[in-house]
Image 1 (tube, helix red, strand yellow):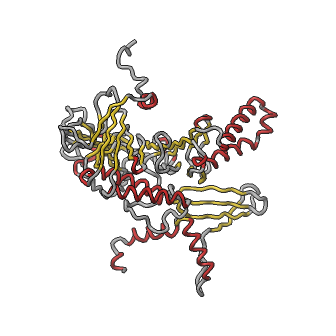
Image 2 (tube, rainbow, N blue to C red):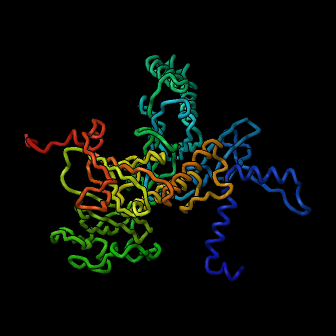
Length: 505
């Protein structure tokens, strides 16, 4: 056994340690319950789930007790739950902190609350997340981390506003009246008298969450990722300056083994090597040629240090030219691959529907632009625009990536297997866990070719593509439909403010 673990000893030991420290709360409670029922073996120490630490009370400056629980929460990876209690003055405080890694990009979530069940959707608000109640234009600034639901957030805001309302009415009656109106509106929202309304969460670390449910309708839930600014990286402790000359450290990123076409080889013109490479721009020196790799300087979204972005233009038969872009940071290891489509903005949007019936259909190439939504009604699946960025892959590939992402968020798993290990997601409500298991089972059947389904790409910029097996003749399994863009789509794309004629005046 020792010989077998020798090559990956550190990795296996780290994984075991993480599992020991950050188990689901349900599994911890079950193990403690079994220990209590069966008793402890002679000489065996009692399992301690909650750590207790004597610490200073900042209210009365006497010693109180801080309790720590290391656990894994569905949709949120690992967290530390902290509870402080002072027996001298009665002061109490509860909060959570993320114990997981900072994600490569920041994330924004939005939820349209339309019924009582939506108020019970889980919300994870990290200590740097900004939560907004859009209909009230009310913003909860970054502060104490919370693991609650939508109703809990509304209730917390209402309680905070009510705490000093009497003094506010005496000292500032006009302000007090406005606050009283907000308090009444919050009460109506929690009582279900103000449906629908919109809430959102913006977290630069990417470690917050508003629960998504399989089968959500269009426009009900949305997630978008964004590159952090230098100020946000600095706030997270990632934006330190580049070391001064003579104090450089060697690149700590692991060796990359990415697809050959993304390597900076075969450059046109040739790319200088050495220290000049990250700051060299060879895009503007000649016309862009298909199937050649170009490079231009960029800043890493993860650590803000200088890096190079490689670009390659390819031609998709019977579609158009697209640009493949790859960024690899040698300082922190950040990697990203994106697909960009170009050309003029078409007059209408495009909806492409593919009937997936065989395993050959799962191997069709698919280009999902960042402006496109992906919908599979039979699988209760909808991916909103901007959630996955631009992807050029196969039907099987994009479904596998969706399953991997959702399984990681729902059960804290990193692989794409269809089987959920015993105990995964024990902290999740029983009904929610059953819904997720049914969803992943259906998605797994579709990926394995056991379940036919229809895949639809709704793209207001008509920049998405599904491979036809009969091109240039029409494919009987593909339906292409043009449609008029909605006002909301025009506004989101900025087309209402775009003026291409007469702008000189």
